[in-house]
Image 1 (cartoon, rainbow, N blue to C red):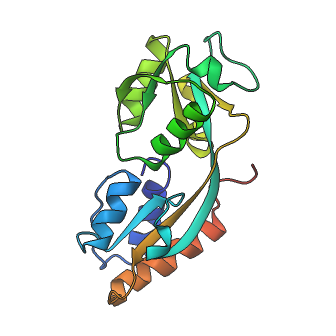
Image 2 (tube, rainbow, N blue to C red):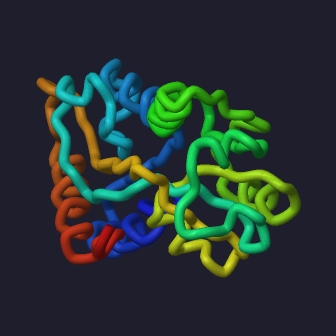
Length: 199
């Protein structure tokens, strides 16, 4: 929501001022479950999930996970290894995050256990921890571009963890006129204003 929704929602409400939109923030796994049980009409999610084919979906962007530390941190370099990352306290997203699942698998495959200092979904809290403590976190590259002035550095993983970001909605669910307007607008918006130019 930090990267995707603010500009999109402003543009949508300018085009469709009479269409009500209410946003709720959840990690991707829970958001998909809420779409499936009709608690949400649609969700913006990390699409690297085993059950993504249970939903209608529209791809909005390709991105990658980057390891983030303050610009003064000793690990600032062109690439960071899992072994490097396992040596310092880490901030992970909240527990029902697809990104967490992907990262834990990567650590396990290389024989390491991450030292998780905190689970958090608030980007500004995470940035404060990075600036004031000797810790790291994992964000999407599109997020680090937006927060470059915050004194953090995004370091690509080797090999990379690439992700797809998109909107999902329930198969077989009636799509209202307002929901169709939002879906169409969102797909067109990210074609015209891509988040990530190149990876």
